[in-house]
Length: 396
Image (cartoon, rainbow, N blue to C red):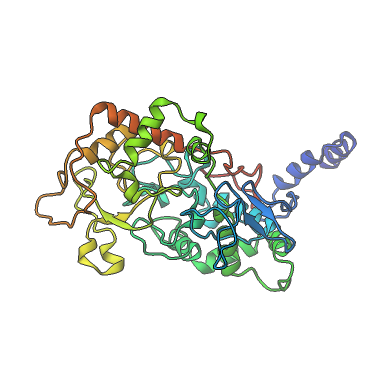
């Protein structure tokens, strides 16, 4: 009787949220249905919707047609092909999944736990933490512009975003889930059954949500994480006043033959997507991380890691695969301290030929840091959902 009066009072006052909260917290499971917004029908910033309901990348670097074999077109750049063509609904569904700890075994860890938008889509830790707070081997790389990358993980062991995301999902050290438990969890949530039908209107509504649909949606969202409109980009496209004197001096150091930074951190992604042995030290006296030697079964790649993008680098300390350096200043100092100076005793590594002794001055190193900060662009930072389809608390 008392409960009926409370509901009647909420109805009279128009408090729909209050009614939902009352239902939700009066014995209902977290998988019960409650209203969530419809999936977005517009593309995220940096993408344009075409007639086929596909979001196509549109930015400073592809605003002109590239010259074709017939000689027709305009601007060329080193920007590789991106994974695009997803619908706005697929991208938005992927956004919900990305932030939802329902994807982990104990429902405490989400993708955003290690890739937090407030931390440059990293986690701010030297090495990430997994299930039960377990310290992992490597730092979480930023996900900005990940849709352009051809090799993923520090050691390049994955070639697609779908392949990459399966490992943290089902690693007992990370999110700790299993395919069977993940599918049961998502299929038991009425909101997700509704949203998957909305994102994939041609799917069999009676069929259970498949793992391929989950990974496709998360891939759609991750491919939309774009950062290509920094102060540097404005300067590179003709706005001379975008950079100040110190930043321009830093740019000149960056692309000089002496420093050779741009040889590996090639614009506009600021990575050449290759692997390099640079001899960076591990933390806490840990043994050498073999890096790309393991997946590629190539001893010449012992201690090699994928050249990371420098986009939003000022937002993602600490640095290197091991989080060895706390600041950008420490990091650039490493490169001028001499070839192979930090290699552990007993290791004979094939250091990349661009690593030498540039002998940069303190002034040049400071200006280099000034320039690296101009690569920050979070204008397209993804919006954190106000509520999750699972009803769980967002975990970052």
